Image (cartoon, rainbow, N blue to C red; front, side, top):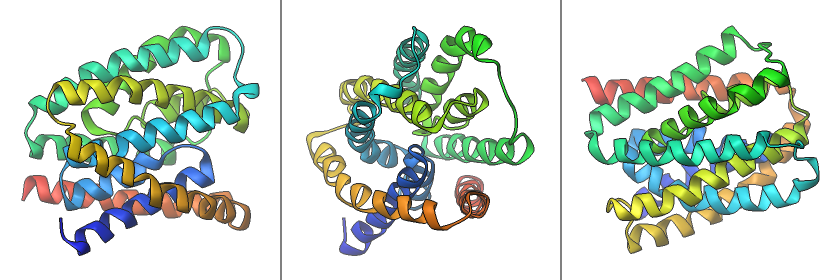
Length: 246
């Protein structure tokens, strides 16, 4: 990999770290489609897997006091771990063009849902019932495309959890998926010793820019920040569609 390519990857990870610092979740939403648009989906998924695990373990521990009580969080996380195993098998089986379309459709689905139903709500009692199917579906999407946000973040947002409870829940969910995804990727030959080192190195720009995201969230109105992210995601999705179809 050339120096220019390394700098591009670092910039993608910095963007993901900025989003995670601002919202507590969503680093793959920016980093994965950006890297997939320049390199390929498997590369993007592998690069993000170690940062996903370690940053979410840290966040889950930091916000552990705010975790919703009962079995909800654990059923959601276990279901995600099951789903990501099937999704990783899909990642290994599908050609790059199809994977690019999966990522593009996932991103556009997330953008469209955020614009069309920003105030969608699910009663928490119903959310506990839906936690397993939502977790499995989100896990499959994470395994196949590296992005579970269209299901996972949309589902948790709809439950209207307080910010600290949201971060505690989504961190456990992502950490559980990543812990399962790493051996699955290694077994299928997608994650190698070389790519594992690259994934470890990806922690540097991601962690470095998380404080930047926190500062931006304090200074920018949430609506403006949200719209900037959605426009950027729409552009990345369009690039992925173009590369896959043209």
